[in-house]
Amino acid sequence: MRNKLLVMLLLCCAQAGAQQLALWPDGAPGSEARRSESEKVDNTYVSNVHAPSLTVVKANPRHANGAAVIIVPGGGHRMLVFQNEGMVAARSLNRAGVTAFVLKYRLARDQGSGYSVENDAAADLRRAVRWVRAHAADYGIDPHRLGVMGFSAGGELVSLVADNPEPPRAGKPDAIDQLSARPDFQVLVYPGPLGSPAKAVQNAPPAFIVAGSNDKCCMPPALALYQQLVGAGVSAELHLYADTDHAFNMGQRSERLSDVHWPDRLHDWLADSGWLIPHQGQPPQGVPSPAP
Image (tube, rainbow, N blue to C red; front, side, top):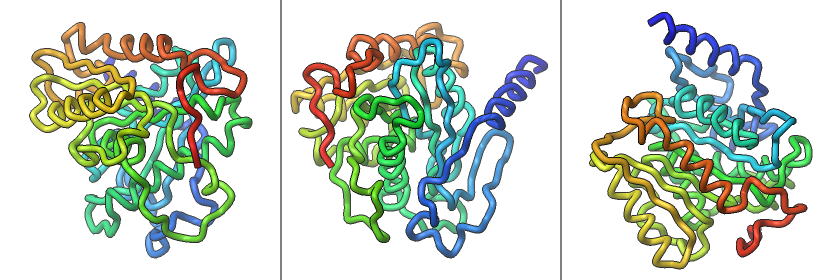
């Protein structure tokens, strides 16, 4: 218990020292009636999000390589598992030299919410991709090596953005909206079923997918998306872990060594795919540039 409390304290301190950035200077379209409300924090979970934001977790400058990942925590669209599926994932990516941005998005199933997953929450992730590209130089990031990583409900948003067409946008567009919202690569961690089967898989970015073989909710869509991507000629890697159910996070909630070490397989994939290597502003060889 003492060690668990120490870890919680360290995570909270790390979050407190991180920079949180609003995605829209005047608020997200459709949130006007509630954007003045404060977020609710219960233990390490966040809810009542009406001002979508990114929390920046920079890699150590000594080994930062210019790659970046936007992390999308899960929580059933009712809350955000902000620490275990956000900040912990960010620190893991930092160790590979990747700068991380943890997304707080609007929650379609939060109590009293008037938002939708497909329009509002997915729009927050698309805006996040565009925002990071627009500010890439500020954080020493290569705009052609920007990925998205989603857990469970966050994985649904990743699939909706990376593997499906973008619906008409709400609100008045600004300069950031002119940039592409297509990520360069995608990481789906026990993704939920929304967004599957994909409707634009032929234009999808390379994918790393991981789930537990006992996960009745999210193993089937993970497998189905992998088969779709491979069938469309998109590079994809799938890991299904035996005797593993949902929500193993970054391995810290399991005693199985394979679960504990799955982030190492992600780091291997990032390296093998060339995402950790600077390319002078160009995507890795064989990977097309994102289109607006």
